[in-house]
Amino acid sequence: MNEPIVARHWLTLAAPKAAPALATSTVLILGRIWNANGAEHSVGNAALIVVLSAGAAAAGAFSSAGRAGDPVIAGTAFAASGGLALAGVAGYADGLPLPLLLWALATAVAYGIAARYWRTDRRETLAHERQTAVRREEHGHVERVEALRAGAQIEVARSGAAYAEQLAQALTARAVLPGFNPAELTQAGLPELPAADITKENRA
Image (cartoon, rainbow, N blue to C red; front, side, top):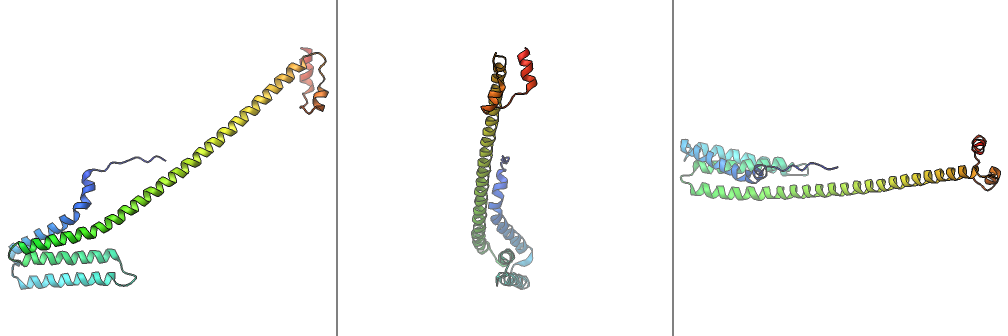
């Protein structure tokens, strides 16, 4: 019933929050490295990035269309399209202002999309915790009721045993008295004592 509480490291908690910024920053850095290695004003490289980015966007559109669309695939395709576009601008542009502007925009969009999934995950986690707490309370209530019932049965059994013992002691004490007639007790509704025991008690 009692589950161990595991405290996660702060890096484990912070990693998902930093993932969008790390992803866009990595794309920006790779784009600028590409720029320094001959991609600046290269029409062929720009055309390649445009084709790849458009293809990823088209794949995301097809994946999200219809009832059978997969939101995970669509989101991945759109993220790849945006990353390719950012890498293309960072590799083709002269200076840093435009790549940095697009980096800031892409980071904001990434955090906006991620926040939606974080809220959904948080709601599901809270719902699961509430259901677990309710189940624990129900199980605890059932256990308490069963414990009370078992205790009551034990007390009843003890009371019955004590009554039987006291009755046997009283009958035994009465049997040794002069003028004891077990037939009268039987007629009165009390249990009949064994004849052998009564004879032994009378002899004693």
